[in-house]
Image (cartoon, rainbow, N blue to C red):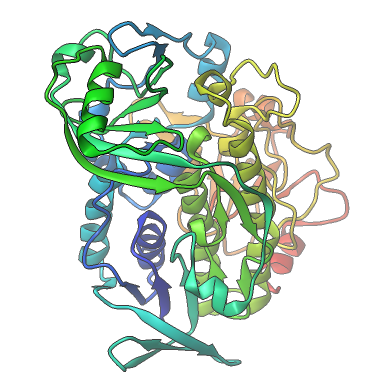
Length: 487
């Protein structure tokens, strides 16, 4: 089988490599850095991303890497950490909706801990991972992509995934412009070491927002013990001054604080106008830059990889026509734009960023943002139902949405999402002569969730998105499957 080349060895590139290897695709990943990220960066891995890791057999490894922050889930606010108060938890109704929607739990796992795990697993599963390897150019033709490397060598690949970051040289080389709200100010991350175990005992937090007369911003837990990040606005201080201000904002002015690094950055919303160009596909920050306030950046990139990689595998194995790849832009560009826009709306503060009560008319419900988006493309057969709502999570098997989760076996904890497998599947009570697996789900709970009769079914794609419903007028399952695979 021809190989796929990935440019970029961050969370998105490594996840793409793992998904491609799961589908048996020869994979080469190159990264110009000598090692994985030394910065904590992204930390929240939401349940939709954990579903992806679960599907390819990584859920336990990711959960293990996240053990240090297992109890650091809450949000706090106050003048200092010591004087902070717990913010209200998610309303019980929404928490119940989340538990009912997925077999997985969100975790906190900083990027500098997770990337090495993904790299090791990708290498063990047969991906060719090359750090200290920089791409300096590429040319594509009708049959593939020739990639030039800094050392003077070149590599031939059938397709190229550009997961090379917000400044993506690949995107720039393709001349792809970006749209969105643009820059939203300036910010600074101060990564520091201080033993806060006594301070945070009984005050454990994911993020603690502090507002005072000397320095306002937010603390984020990296390991829950002695590694932390302080996010603030366009502040410029010497390391000694940062030490003093951070200790005072912790509420322990005499605390020993070691500044590890300081990184200036620009909160922004910029989304590529095209997510693909011929045989080159943009993913992650190369496709969409967003603020961190809704914790969607890395997760949106992981969903890019999930959407794209099974399609590449199907095309490379001859199971589908190359037109299937056109659905990547059609599906992921609107999803990426929504995630970036919603992130930019949540820049006003911690209470706005959680926004579970939906009091702001422009806010999409967070659970709907995670898993409720509805794709519209030629890889989905529209069922004529009203579009999925975005002010709440409602997973009822609409075409283009993630299929409903239902426990099939409470003892083994097998979900409908687990039963689909690595290809298309027909889920429900319908019989078919097609060479696709049939997952029998004939319970009253399934019928209530989907609105289908006992002999109805959903045709589900490898990414667990519904491609067709049996109550779609004038289209049979045979026609639906043929339509998607013949693109």
